Image (tube, rainbow, N blue to C red; front, top):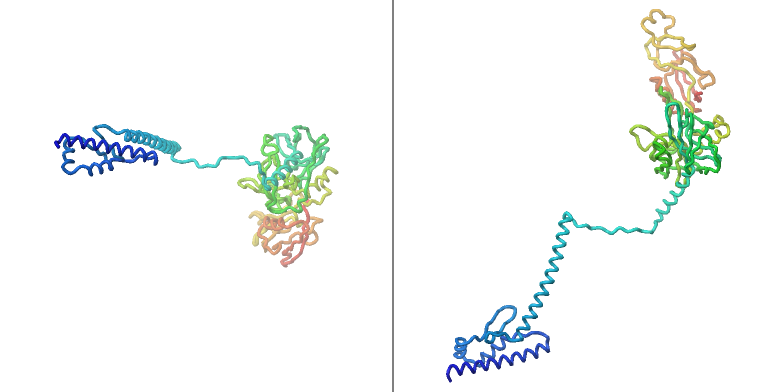
Length: 477
């Protein structure tokens, strides 16, 4: 057989094998739903029918197989692809497009997140959405109840404006009765030529002074108006440190009328000493201390408990660089004074629990030092001693007094006082309550720490002898 015949036979066999393989694959694809690579099977069958020499000739004279070692085999038969492999290419193309689309979408999401991160300054915003709750806690309900009491109390608080010769003032007041009596501080209306009261409903009217107690820093004014809402007062006997309180007032100006501040009672029954310009004690006040914010204009306003009841009347605060130390007149004593003023126009009949007058021994004294000469001088009908000058030592030898001791020289004794009949002119007090007397101010400060009715121990020198006596302190008139 010649070479051409041999080649023709080989081609016919190959075509038959290809057709057989394709038919078999179609059946398998229909049954299994997947594409089967048949190039290897065809290759095996061809090898079985062709010996080594024939195979070499076929390779030399034709283009039998083109193999692409990728994800699949592509079999070329005389330069043409079979229908089966064309379908596989279409499926692959669709798959590639789908995968590409998913990849592009994923990359778009990633790029979007990165851009958002960069434009937000490199920080991602983690937050919880803001919501509105309609639930009210028990604590909030208690606070609301307290505030409702404060709101009610405001109806009994008034704004007071005054005019004096050279100034205008602002203060606060508390309605005492439904027919127009109002309580405030004495210092708030002292020297006022006119007094105007503004109520919570916005109505303003003039007021007249019924009376006041300078010692207790309380005053009662009267307006001609009916149907007012009186404040409710509570006893301060049950007040305690840490008790929650509210203050209503007119701080600074009428622009801030009915301002409410909150605080606690910092101290109960605080004793405050009031001195005059010369530094002499005038009186003592027993007050409630609070840390609530107070300003000028709060004077006369109420200190309230959480039920809106008046515990005290604001009257003063420490000034300067001090904050959070204010005071109120206790309601028990304030009502006693107010009732007396409404009745009599003054509080002379009341033994005040708020104020006390300066306790005194009942003498006029001058501090002297041991070893010095003093001279007795008459002035304005009174006699007193002072250090003698060099000239007086030469010309007034008969009036010179030589001090053998340091102490308080008794210049005179006041009648109807504790010292009357126990001390006399010329005595030198050297000790008070066990303390050596070192100056007149030191002697007075010991007495200032005591109260009217207290008994003080006095040691003094009389004609050289050391004596001792107990004296009851009386109130300064």
